[in-house]
Length: 477
Image (tube, rainbow, N blue to C red; front, side):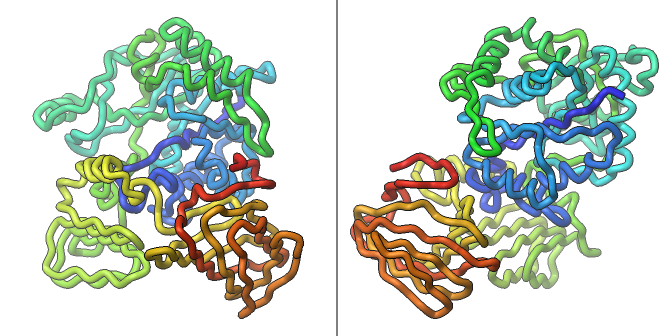
């Protein structure tokens, strides 16, 4: 049996699910449906397929530790974890994955999957992959077209032709054309015809066939992807693509770069309970609902409400007499929107970015490879954080030009370096780190270390860090 190498694409920012999903912690790392994150669910749904090899993961380098940690929690050791220094859309990401898959001399089938989708009927999805293998093995670039459940205007469509795929590839059809997101009347006509399917962004093909077609239509992309991989640097468990080469790569989606131009495109219509979770209304549609159509997460009380989605955080969220409304509460931002207007959330994000507000990209709670910190309070010349350090983890050896720090241990134990001194702190003990002192915080224990940090000084930005040593390879200074 030809091996199948999953290619998990994890480079998106998911801004349409703001304020929960943000650039530094996008939706693929969020537990939106069921247990675990969407990335973890993507792996879980394919790990039982026959012939499935270890995955190749393509991720934004800023998300590398979240990707690695979430896969580690599942016991998954990727065949490669490729880090993009900049986003260049799906075609270059798949190109470097295909080149990596062929580096050992093999020519496997690649099952390309976005890591932020939901599929509720996993057995049907397994059957679809198996049904597509024959066509992909014979040189077809197979995309999985979703049987539409209605005239959706938020998706692109694929029109299937009347020609069947290669012999033995039951259900696979040739592709007549790809079409952009339609207006409502056009979408209704598409659905009524029975020949149009939603474009899922999932594919199955031989690595060599994809690269050959990409070379035909976008040779500069293949050259840049090849140079980026050849110049890649190993960094612990990651492979950092060469920045200069990848930045020079043309940016394009696989649809525009290859699928709309090739004569090898094929589509397998499937009905697998798919959603790209592309908006809060999409999440409402797939979420468990009460008899009144309400889907709630967290501590939520709703009276006389219909067709609402409420996503609560740490606080109680109360809804009264609302219809078709989305409420999303996070530590530092609250979204209240009409359900039919949530596609415009990206305009709010654009405005926040234009005003250089941190809520556009970061949460109050920020994840780091060693743990996390939560900005509890701040004011003129002070800031308070709750810091959690994982067992065995350590922050970098660092110093600050503009701030001093007080550390109070809440639970666990801390090993503190402050200039020439190295000492331990236990619960309810504290220490002071003077401005300009070279210091490090470590957790030598087997349980998480929790402490309160009080910063004071003339400037408290995260860029006031000079790193001298860092086990995670982060840039000094």
